[in-house]
Length: 40
Image 1 (tube, rainbow, N blue to C red):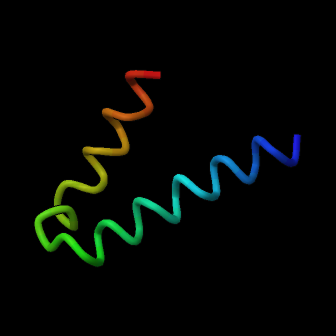
Image 2: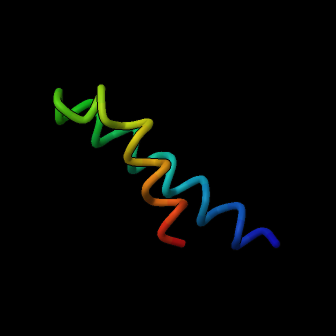
């Protein structure tokens, strides 16, 4: 259970970091998350 939480937390961290470094990702972050979860 802890591994699953850590995995989700790491994904959120990576997304937040990528939005900071990539200005275009800020507007597409929500849509990107929807696409990511829909693929899974």
